[in-house]
Image (cartoon, rainbow, N blue to C red):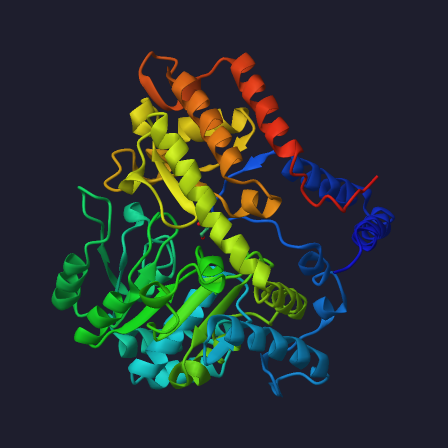
Amino acid sequence: MSSPNAESTAFRSALEVIRAVEPRIADAIGAELADQRESLKLIASENYASPATLLAMGNWFSDKYAEGTVGRRFYAGCQNVDTVEALAAEHAKELFGAAHAYVQPHSGIDANLVAFWAILADRVESPALRRAQVRQVNDLTEQDWFALRRELGDQRMLGMSLDSGGHLTHGFRPNISGKMFDQRSYGTDPATGLIDYDRVAEAAREFRPLILVAGYSAYPRKVNFRIMREIADSVGATFMVDMAHFAGLVAGKVFTGDFDPVPHAHIVTTTTHKSLRGPRGGMVLCGPELADQVDRGCPMVLGGPLPHVMAAKAVALAEARRPDFADYARRIVDNAQALAEGLLRRGAKLVTGGTDNHLVLIDVSGYGLTGRQAEQALLDSGIVTNRNAVPQDPNGAWYTSGIRVGTPALTTRGLGTAEMDATAELIHTVLSQTTPGSNADGTPSKAKYVLDPALADKVARQATDLLATHPLYPSVTLA
Ligand code: DSN
């Protein structure tokens, strides 16, 4: 462990150097730390990376081009990048028990694109795709694109629907995956909110997808990946799991056996910055059969690797291999369950009636609000969440009827189950005291709301008090 003094000195010195060039950026960095310290961060996809992870990103690796992979680069002088990339991949393989790890993706979307193209290259005979793999996508001619489209045809993808908690990159229109694939979704059982595996199997039999995708960004339950793999096998589909949200729970061995995607999926993608608590980025894990195709990610769909971020991934993955990470992962789920119980006890309506992962989805129609109204009222009260659709959401994806809350960040800060109950009280107080507002013409608004500012201030002060006993980055003082 480094000394607290070293951490404080490192960040202070960095800000001093930045301030000499552009003081407004130094101020913004300081302000971001202050804001994060003061807010009750319940965004399920966010966390707080360690000082070592953050510091590993601010260095000379940022200046290096390294297209290609370890030992096979398109640029000279990559020996140190090779060290970093190989170490990050090694830690990832050990941590997740994977045969192969590709640590270059810059984000979860990138990791999914790498996986999609690897599967297409593996499964579909396409000379145009082979040409595309050795050239930058930007260099492809219009004819190349026509040929690609013709040769790939309408390949099919079956993924979880957005309003059931699936992710945009699993074949939905706002993302390129929705244009690459002919997509169909599986939802959840309207009565329970849970995945109905028989229905998934039925959809797979009817649709015969090339790729079956499991994974979510707003489903509060475990997924049985053994059953999903059996469904994929029954129709000859490649089984892909996007574990971006729950990678930390897999790393921390909370999700094991049927609930650990790595032994069951042909290919697994993730981000590194959510429950895994690393730097902002992505990663792909797979067996030997897809490894060569996955390693073509750059230049197929990725720009040059970010060696400074790969260095930070190596640091964070090394941290996740320590025994205390398993304790952290377990506490994330304990906290989510305590939060869910606290909300239920106070009368909140939760999708699926609870949680067995890191997130809780509150159906705020129970409070007579839209997700947008609830999100803003909570924000006014110092509680940072995000609105999210609930299954069959009558308010659509913009206004929504849900609020998604997650515990990875507050658990990193050290809050425990008692504080989760206090958090449930704050959330319930705000939501039960907020009423829908009206437009200027008197019609009901899905965005406007009425909340007594004095109450919002009181809750914000209570939230600050709750956080005061668990300071964020206690070792770091900037002034
Ligand atoms: N933006 C991430 C989330 O909040 O779930 C997923 O892309």
